[in-house]
Image (cartoon, rainbow, N blue to C red):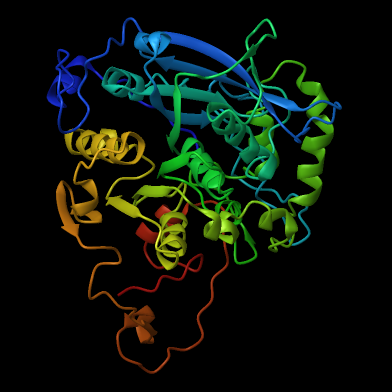
Amino acid sequence: MRMIVIPLTAALLAAAGAGPALSTTTGPTQPIYSRADAIKQTVFVEVEGVDSDRDGKNDRVAADFLRPKETETGLKVPIIMESSPYYAGIDGTIPNHKVDVDENGNPLPGVLAAETKTAVETFPGYYDNYFVPRGYAVARVESLGSGRSTGCPTVGDAQESAGPKAVIDWLNGRAKGFDAAGNPVSAPWSTGSVGMIGVSYNGTLPNQVAATGVEGLKTIVPIAAISSWYDYYRANGGVLAPGGYQGEDVDVMAKAVLTRAGKEICAPVMDEFTATQDRISGDYSDFWAARDFLHNADKVKASVFLVHGLNDWNVKTKQAAQWWEALSRRDVPRKIWLHQGGHADPFNVRTVEWLRQLHLWFDHWLHGIDTGIMNEPRADVEIGPGQWGQHASWPLPGAHPVKLWLGSSSRLGLLPRPLSSRESFVDQKTRTAEQLVESAPSPTRTAWRT
């Protein structure tokens, strides 16, 4: 779930309408505040009741805020927050698990070497460039166990969710915050209205926090995000890995993002992940239930603008589909974009339209402006390169399940056909799924085609 986000260039900002400051009394917010003069503030927020590193003290998360200078003289603004375990980079030396193993998990001779993680670029931002001039504060929150935060990474559970939740509580006067010298600080400049956004892991955290039902979180924009960590590292009892990271698992991820000072204190927590994540049976367990946000979809009070790539083999599209379905059953205010790309930020897919809709969305849910965004079609779906359609909802009206039947000659059909003779294959472990699909018939794979 590694993402490198491209900075917003001057040309694209101009194309998106982020030019010279314009005053307005009606319509969407305008860029009337100076990004260059914005106030930067760092706050260490105490996470009440969470001691993930077991040192006998409440954990604290580090949060950086960028807000218009006018907030020093009485202006109150809402907050766009991105929480991440990646701001301090990742440890690229952590090896992935071996994937060539027998039924008991013992290594087999194999040609697939375990991959290691590569360093991730710290998010350079376009939210601050675009939204601070329009009367927002932008926050970057370092996850527990990463960067300047204390605690340990716990990957998807309630302790991890409690970090950004505590920052929302602080912005609403319900939690304690401190400056670098340990002096208490508050947020008189905050309206208390928060929107969370992010891509990949940074997009998963909004789902997690929304599932706590925290007051003040008005909207989330989860992009290429997880809704169940079981479905990221497992599938129906099978042990798998995200596309491009064979052998990764919860313990590998946790160790990679463990970048805090004195990280040795987290060694027992890391060892527990390895012992309890179960790479043998792949069964769904309490470990995975604690990392399944679908269980708490009924707690979601925030609106949701969901974005996912239909060709995302890192965080697979199922993650978005099942989250959307759970939200739909509860009639959560929502909107969806489905594009033909992979594990991508929509800014890089459809820049101008993305910024237009995102701007109207945040203005509506955080500033309380009737921008008309909720009257626009609920679903934007790309059916081909650059071919977008807008629809009343998704699945598209009129869509229904279709059964495909196994037939002779390895064909899938719409009608029942006589079954072929028994077919089998022996996994060779030397070719990827993509190579197997493209290869000629062989005893190392069976392909069923429409």
